[in-house]
Image (tube, rainbow, N blue to C red; front, top):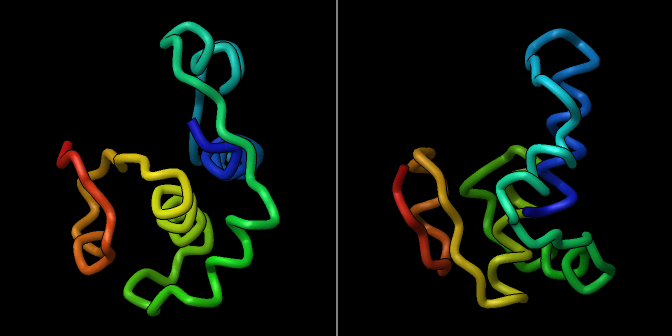
Length: 89
């Protein structure tokens, strides 16, 4: 689970758009997901991404998936043009 997702969730919780029992990290630990930090390499890859998706958090997820050869899980079709493996939810 990307630290970018935790960051986005924290912002949404702080403005009342998301409610969670416990914290985001507790949910990640409970699901037994591995934690993925945001690195300088990930940030550098953002320069190369075409602007198919304008959300900065989602763009970071694409950069991380490319850098780490990971699979994204989403229902957002704006990820489709990127060269990443996707599981459609």
